[in-house]
Length: 104
Figure 1 (cartoon, rainbow, N blue to C red):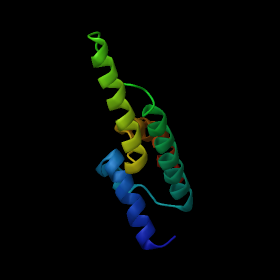
Figure 2: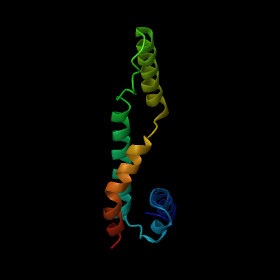
Figure 3: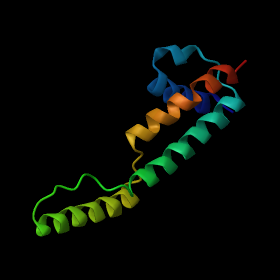
Figure 4: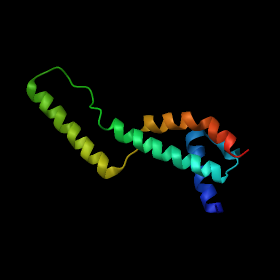
């Protein structure tokens, strides 16, 4: 792992955990954990995209409009490759201790 890789990993960790992560040692193990976090948060985001938003109880044409919007949102998510913020935060929370101990 080179310095560029370490800086990228550190940028990700500081973005997720704040400045305290800037002092965490970056090792090969840390890199593997960060990669696993990325994969898990993307998988979560893909699953979340299938969950429809709230459907108002109104006229039948409103339900059709909501379903159309949900379909458009799903198609857009495939094109944009967006990671859901809740998934990212949940993954970060789940891996915090593992990452803190990875360099020791």
